[in-house]
Image 1 (tube, rainbow, N blue to C red):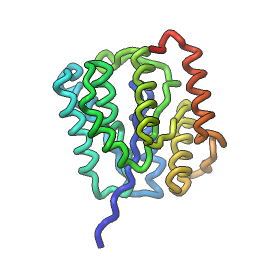
Image 2 (cartoon, one colour):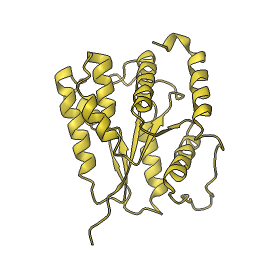
Image 3 (spheres, rainbow, N blue to C red):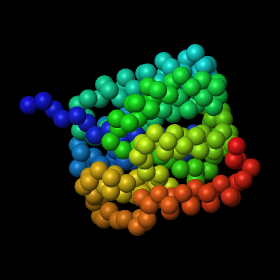
Image 4 (tube, rainbow, N blue to C red):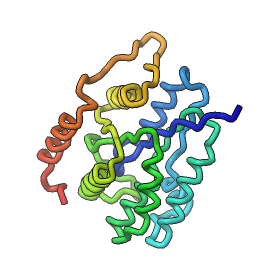
Length: 219
């Protein structure tokens, strides 16, 4: 009997929103119920470290392609946590270089994920000396990404909170949207963190509150 296709979870969001930390936390928490759960790291981070710089416009497409190739290579994983997708590269290509040619393939790929988790901008922005472009760019990226997901009918759950609360919100979204079993941690029962966290109106209000606190960051 052929192995079933993996459940692919996309973790996307603007820079400095905790995507990698969340992916690692989710992998650890889901491991007891999904022993083969895998995490696909962000290829861009590896590329920048190897090159000592950020990519130029002509290099964006290859980075997006390699990210998706690495995701597709994990065909045997029952559950796959994907730390960014080609859509993230496509948005940066538009905002940094005015290039929208990556959107068609990136949006088609994004529609194939079982669930998209969008990491919110409620974490402090911290410079890393290479990749990150600033708090204002983070806000612009977040708004553009949300608009694309909504316009193209790609369902997503926004994830907010600090530390364990952020992990709990993501676990809740996975259980709510996909019917996954509630993960358990020895000595600490899994709990719902917010009865309304999957309510789009509630999420929209929180997003607007974040913008109101930092109006200078809005484009």
